[in-house]
Figure 1 (cartoon, helix red, strand yellow):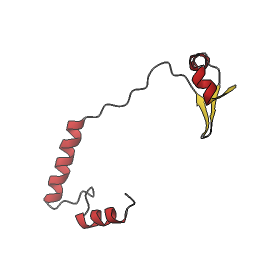
Figure 2 (cartoon, helix red, strand yellow):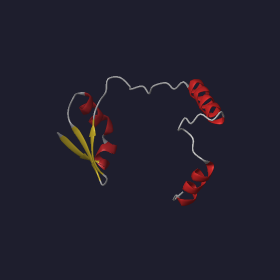
Figure 3 (tube, rainbow, N blue to C red):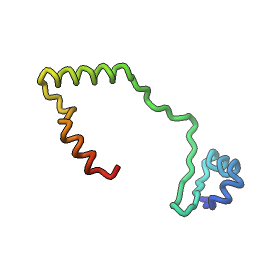
Figure 4 (cartoon, rainbow, N blue to C red):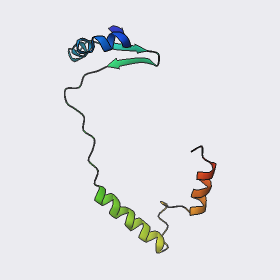
Length: 89
């Protein structure tokens, strides 16, 4: 295992990234803590969102609420405004 400072890592970044790619354990030491460098052969992909389906579902839920069906997804506006007033935003 190789432990490096942030300054040394910035200076020799390609070297330490090659070490991680070759399977060696590289630990970056900083004031915030220790970071373990790992290598993944493929980039991880975020799942694609179907925004149209989300909008359609939201519209359906809203229509149900307006027709008196409690979906549990919405709350009274007074409750929401009180939460905003009491928050640290």
